[in-house]
Each structure stands twice: as structure tokens, then as C-alpha cells.
Length: 499
Image (cartoon, rainbow, N blue to C red; front, side, top):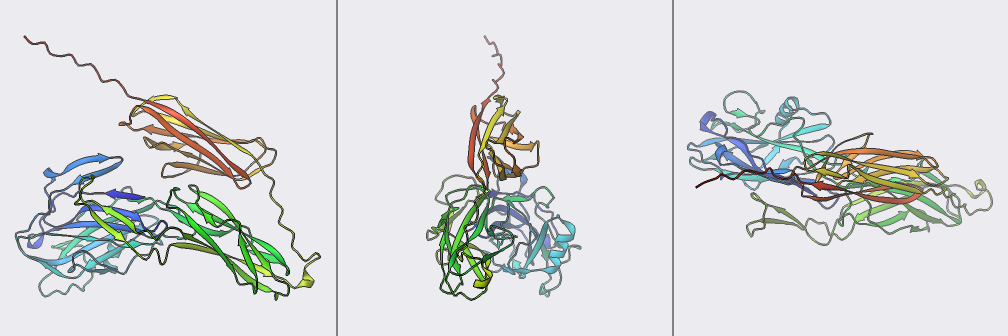
């Protein structure tokens, strides 16, 4: 779940005191503790810039990796403040201070810098937060770099938040006179002030960090269950998971109720959800005879399991290869003591015995009629050349006599193709393309054609895709399909005749 972006910036133009810009030399992001905060690590190089002629560009998967020469030195001493800004999703909480690996460069929130960034580089659904460093002096003939690693919360944790998490980081610099304490508002005009010296943000160049989140939601509407005394009441919950499924997305479930003398039991004690899935969980609450009438709270808690093992985050400022020079940051981050969790609650209203018809024991809720689904996935064409277009068609069909409710159809694309569009409204996350249907009647079917483009550098072989169809009252159905990727033969080049 980690995105690595390394960005090079051309040499900055000399400003007052011969100085300098702030260049990003490396950047990476990751989501901490499975469903926790998003951490962004950015290394900046302060100095007159780097020579663009020494930049070497390689492509690894779909991310560009740029290798920079060391920070350049500045022949003159200069005094100033570094600016760092983050464009993050609206509603995401940011820290008030920003420590760095350089102890002389501690940052604080700057309202004036934030206002400048928001008015200059506004993007709908996003917000800016700007920071400014303490004043510092850089001696002549020296250069330095520093790293900042803030953490930002998900905009709507536990609802759940549907990623990916977009962001963009910029850096800037303003020079200060020896008598200036740096407390004035940031001005982005005039000599010596450059609010954005790194690559300027646009509406399309945000980095997108994949995320995972879990919401513990009420499983029925309204969010109140009526119960009598001396029996058991079933309280439904829905654990909605957003993101790709993997081995880390593993949760331990527990419940509680403040019914005096009451006991509870769960329909399941653990959860390892599928990608972008709804997971029903029932909490049975035994209500003792004589329980006073009133409202009581039933809670369900999901905790990330297996967090006693430290989380290892690896960052490499250079070529992506195994090396003993790779820096390792081990986050013992209280994950074992305070693991990430999500909780939800439902109110049960216990009524007086006279208000409950005989028999006193509540009847078990009627089970919804079960349906059956089938899904079919085909590749069209079955053979295609690398770099060309193709498509996968997915069709889900209700093969039963009962309506299928809350139907979700998803197709997971292979890694060597890129999603272009679909013939109906879908949601694309990671490698999965999904769409929902409220109800699918007996014998009815629903489908979509998913248009893709095969990577130009895709190896010859099978591009295997999978599909699944689920419903709240039906078992999951799955299917697979393969597209054969061909490579075009190299043109024959005549050999020169000599002698």
C-alpha cells in the first residue's frame, strides 16, 4: 500500500543574496497501521539548485523515478525561512507543527501561506495547509537537505473513507534581513520571496496513495431495535470495508451492551473482508426478565489484529534496489498497545411487559428469501498486441426465482493493462472496477463492458482477469477470463554487405 514518487526540479533562478530554492529530491507515502493515518515523507534540498543535465530518468512500473546529483553549494551566506505546503483532501486533519530531520528547521502552521496556496492553487474537494520554518542562516559554500514526515488523518474515518488519498507537496523560500525575526505574514511578491520553487501543482498531478478503511454501521433502518424482557433480541450491524483486501486487513470483533445483567454473543468473532465489501454481523443480546424499560446501547468494535509486530517502512533515496545503505524506520508506534479500531452502536428500546404481546420471547426476524447469482467474464478480443486496446465483458445473472438485493459486480484487471472506461457508471479502485444494482429480479441480468489498454511493455502471455458478483441474500459467484497478449515481431533490418 505504498506509493513512491521522486521528483526533480530544474535549477532555481538566483534571487536576493544569490540564493536559492527548495527542491524536492524524494517523496514517498504510506498508510500506517492498516487503516490509520497517511504519512508523507518528503526530502528537500536547499541551495541554488541541481544541474538538469545530470538527471537520469528510469521507469519502474507506472511511477517515474528520478535520480538527482547531491545538493549544490551556495557561494554566499543567506538567512531566511523555508516554506512547506500540503494539498490534502478536505476534512483531513493536519498537525500544528512539523518537525524535520534538521533540528534548526522546525515548522509551524502559517495562515498567510495557507491562504496564498488556497487562492493560487485551489482544487475542488481539497484543502491546503502551509508551514513556515524558524529563521535560519546558511553559511557560504555549504548546502543541506532535510526531511519532513507529517501524518494526516483520513477525511471521514470509519464511515468508511473510499480512497485513494490524493495529495501534493510544495516547497518555497523567503530571505530575511539580519534584524527580521520572521514573524510577519508570508508575502509571495518582491525580491527574495518565492512561495513555490518546486514543481507547481495542477489539477491533475496529485499523488494518489491507496487506502483502506472500515466502517461499523447499523445493519437496519431505523437505528433502533425494540425488545421485550426475558428473551433475546438480534441487533444487526454491517461492517463496510473500502480498499483492496490483503493479509493485513484482518480484524478481531467484540461487542458490548449496557443492559443490566444482560449477556451478548456475536455471529462471528473475526473478519477478513473482501475488497470493497459489505459484511453483516449480528449481535444477540439476552435481556433479563425485570429489565427496566428504557433505551440501551449495543456496541460492536473491530480492532486490527496481529499488531504486536512492528511496522517496517522502507525509504530509498535513489535507485530502487536492495542495498545495505537503505534506511529503515521501525515504527513501534504504540500499535501493540493501542491498535487501530473502528466502532459503531445501535440503540435497543426495552418496553414494559404489558406492552409486549404474548409470548414474551421475541420472534426471530424473518430471513430474507435466498437468491442465486451467476457471473460470466469474457475477453474481447481473445488475442491482442501489446500497446493496443481490448475489453472485458462481465455479466451477472439472477438464476433463482427470488429477487437478489444489494447486488455488487466487480472485475479485477490484470497488472499489465490500464483501465480506460466502462459502458456504465463504475467505481475504479486499485485494479478493481465495480458497479452496484439495488435489486436484480428473477432471471434478470446486468453487465458492463470494461475497456482497457494493454501496456506497451507487456510481456507475451496470458492477461488473466477475474470477476465476482455478490448480493445481501445470495452467495458469491466468481468467474475468470484470459486475454492472450502478443508481441509484434521486430522489423527485419538488412545487413550491410562488405568486402
